[in-house]
Image 1 (cartoon, one colour):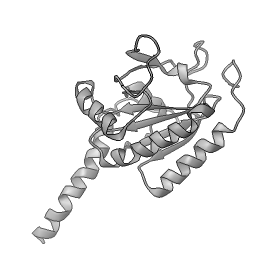
Image 2 (image 1 turned 120 degrees about the vertical axis):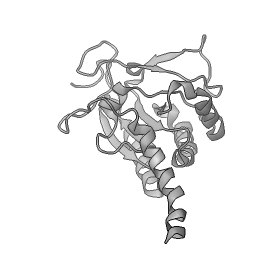
Image 3 (image 1 turned 135 degrees about the horizontal axis):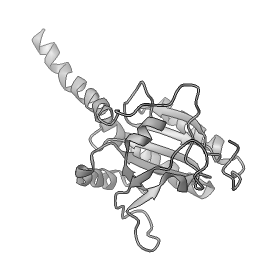
Image 4 (image 1 turned 30 degrees about the vertical axis):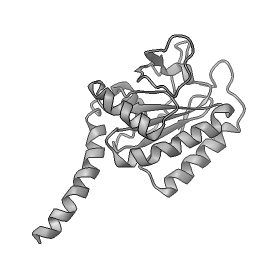
Length: 207
């Protein structure tokens, strides 16, 4: 009996660590189930406040002038956007990241973009950088904030990886948690269904 328990303990500990890494940031309240979360608008209109994401230097992201240390979440509205929440020590996150890279590379010229959001604390930046190098991430990565969690993360499941997709109008269209072949297929289908739609209006879509 003891030997059986000892074999399962490492697996359980690993699964719990992925969940607890996200739960550490889960202090903020979430939106009600009747609300459809939206990305912030650049002009400040709407009910969603803008959010500043502290970026992690990424040598695989082409530099445009001076490298930015942060970005406003409103700056990606108008594209098909995926927020990819991960933990640098999570094996499932490490498995799924190369697939996200592949999707980003395939659809970025069609108006699709990805923002990686590490659930690691900022003092673990070296761990995040190592994760980015190992998985060859070629899109921006920043540190998650309590605001992002309050507005976009699943209020009942804080597991990672957690992927949230927004349409060109800024409205959330799908959220997926974990990584399996089924999740991979659904993620690809969700992205493809959004990139074929006409670009959002300059007003940022209907409120």
